[in-house]
Length: 308
Ligand code: GUN
Image (cartoon, rainbow, N blue to C red; front, side, top):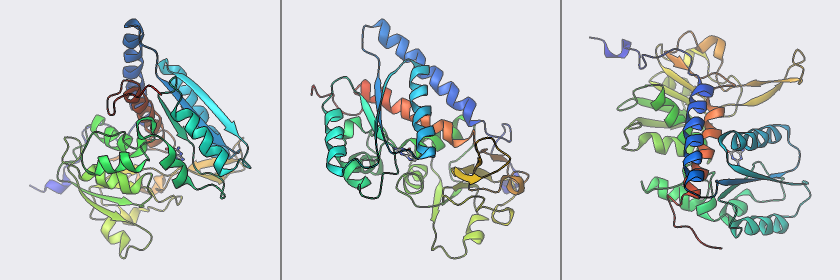
């Protein structure tokens, strides 16, 4: 029997990340009801947004709205893009010591005069619900309980809930960012029920990229270049996960732009056994996993809770 001809999924062709994220949010909302009934305080997420980048504004708005939907408290702290690095670090420290706040994020990118790494390292690991702090990344690599980065864990959860078999499959990740490509390549290679892939991590210097991609059972495109993955790079029957969300000028849209993924959807979708759309694929999962991390932080599941 030709095993490679068996589709990796028995579910529908289009992976509905929006619906799967709704399911996760409903589970979180039910836990909030239980917490409240037990007299516990509801989880509280804070977000720091610096400047007026359109994409960041939309992401942060959606994160705050999602908090309301599941019954969390939320706080949005906004600063102009001339805030100094020292001032921003002082705000981070206030949140670190605020007993009301269970977890917080600083939306990236930051203005050029502020080091994102310094800011990330200033966040207490137990409140780092983005999972970007080296303590959380290191614990993830070591296979210890950690607050996992939201997009990578969202991708693993999406594959799992969609019923896509990953064990022993070859996954090609395109892009090695600290936020997505590198951590998702590590998670997918872990000895976990919903991982266990053989992973190849490709990037801008990879030779024979198309050839390597064609050997993939699962392609994760996280390179940040619109429509980078074309039909000649995908084996018929492969599963394709598109992490890209680039705003491209589009005069036909009221907003003046459309959102483009890293995959040429029109070309690749007919070949793939399952594919995520943009929008409505990975994006909603990132928010759902951020909420899940906030719930874990509030419950002190990973780290003991401190009083200050
Ligand atoms: N910018 C793009 N994605 C993210 C994310 O997941 N978290 C934060 N803080 N900033 C981002």
